[in-house]
Amino acid sequence: MYSCEKTERSRIMKGIMKTTGITSDDVSHIALLANIPVTDEEKKTLADGFTKTMQVVDQLGQADTNTIEPTHQVTGLTNVMREDVVDEKRMFSQSDALRNGKRTYNGFFVVKQVLDK
Image (cartoon, rainbow, N blue to C red; front, side):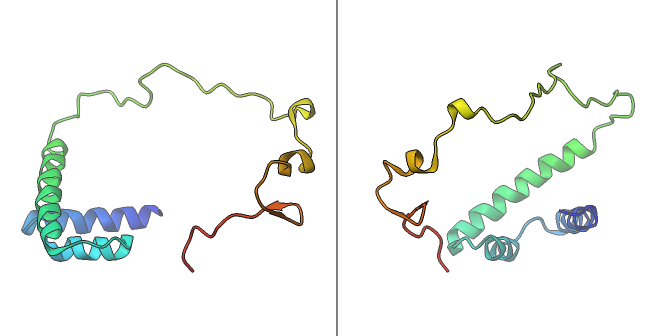
């Protein structure tokens, strides 16, 4: 997501929260974007829950943090990187990899379609 989209979303959400909270229409719009079927009863429940959540977030946003030092990393852990080297002793050949496959075709596994067109 681009920063301008985040800013726009934040501005819209602040505008929604300052006026009425999250409405069933807002939930319908979000569900449409996410391609999730939602019943009218669920819309009401979700709208109430989102409104309560946004109210808590709004309260957190009102906390005075001017005297708090920013924290970027709290665990003290660092990323451990390794060289990206292929270990050919641990590799399967293509025929070895396909040997136990139920269905194969031209050197590939064949599986049932999992996504709708």
